Length: 135
Image (cartoon, rainbow, N blue to C red; front, side, top):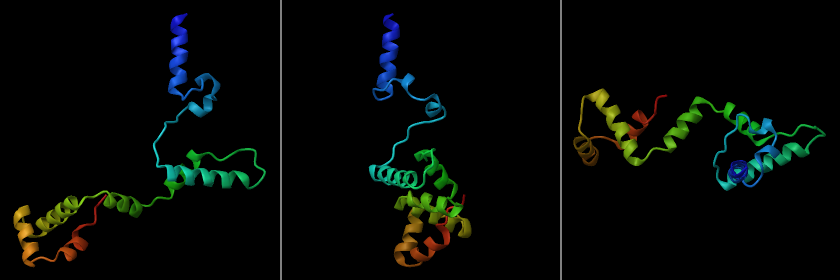
């Protein structure tokens, strides 16, 4: 008997205080919690509210459907842009050095930096030429 109550208590703690049995089975199947910034959640809630207040529909749009819809709209250029946003300056430098090395032969980072500092190479030009990340 004690084991049953501790299991129920664990279920209540893991679901934020609500009993798992009280939730719809369809809501729990195939879902996983994710972390998003508060401003993103607020925007998402605002969109859900806006959609659900227009029209007399009995079915309500869920946040997961809005996210799914938005993900389907992402193009390959969006993915490349997101990847490039995550690069550090060291990553960018390494990408353009490797691109330069592919075209002009192997070059050490020290030698490459020397060419950049002496003006033998134009950093802005190299970045435009080699910084596009291939998928």
